[in-house]
Length: 252
Length: 212
Image (cartoon, chains in turn yellow, red):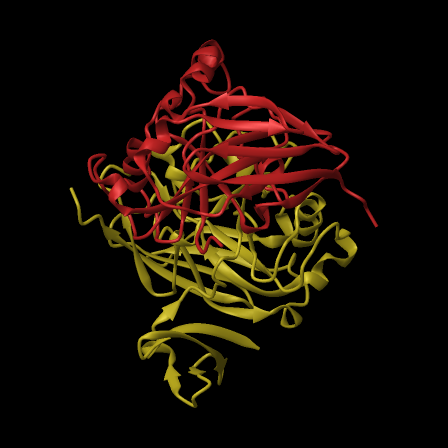
């Protein structure tokens, strides 16, 4: 099953995505067509948002880093999230803004000291994120710093959550980013350095993961700088296709 | 108790910055930080006054840095330093706990984001005079540390302005405005108490984690 969070009659409402993704059915019986839906990021309020850097071997090589332990993990605030079909402003001085298509695992049951072999039992669902980066703003302290990775609306998420039961193997999913239709980021979740189960095991060694927490699992190679007006599509096979546009910054 | 996100800032203590000036010029940093160095404390960290904090085997001694948390009553986005504190509706005493780490190169999730690693006092009224009063930390009733936010490189208002230049500090968010570079350490079996005249105190007891 797929579940989506829509802005409906002035409030966020969770619904079920049905009929080959053509409609979202809400608890009050309303049937909202795909094109008419006002998609909100399918996130739980207060949830912790983890994100991975350098978690695909090809991307590590592309950026000139050596693959190395320990995993590069950072946190994000909910101000970064925006739903499917919306626009993200590119700051006027940002020539190096690039999309990063990522598989997101959403925790369903509390996890503490979970073994990798059992870790996927703690995943409720999966979704897609586009974790934009703006390379000009990188500083070498707690890098990637919040000025790069915690800007408002720079993390489109969705369009929906897919039940974990419907994803046979999260490490065998084709993942692509297209900009204005051109393929810029072809990849597969098979190339993750630490897979979803490994990440849950690693994180839960030192902290408790709670229901709703999200892990953005990193992105493959394919750094492509975006311009205002670009349409960016991040797609993960069997999970969803997340669309975002690059908008101009309204302020000087 | 805190409905939003908890943000914190490191390397905001003038004396600490001076001591690290030579290191900042070398790899991997290359130069001193230009903007505030920020981190996030996720929800599993938040511990109420009087909480028990369990320390794992790899964290025999942890740093306990008492500071002021600013609680936002409305959103702050692209505010000037002059208006920055208008959005602050309250404050609380906070103790940021971390596994000691020397490198500031990578985000400190494994060090700073453990369960119970942010004991918080009950929020009260924000008074700018709090920024000039002693924050005192006791370990087992013995004074272990004393400092003031007058040591900060970026003042509270400058921090809010800097951060809000690229992201919104939302109503319900908490901003820890800086940590003392010489924070004391604590281990299992010890009790922590932090005090600041004008805010509720915060206490925590540290124990060794028992693994089932």
